[in-house]
Length: 113
Image (cartoon, rainbow, N blue to C red; front, side, top):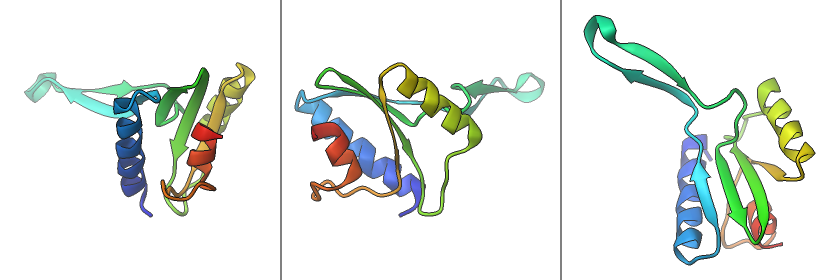
């Protein structure tokens, strides 16, 4: 599964669960944004280096998700962010695949135990 497809599937699932009142989530906006026009056009860097793709609050727990395509791996900045998050007692998961119908899926276990 490509990373963009994975992000879409996970975001749709999380939105459904939020609509049902089961959790609250936010999608992190990392990357670049361009503002202005012509000679005043400039790039703004969004997010912190290594920041996860999603932050979820579910049943009193704070969960951070980093989504990767089939061959993706965590960067050094992402590993550092992971250590910081886990050092604060939150959970961090790197996800390469998602199947909401599989109770053994890593995200399903992370959310619902």
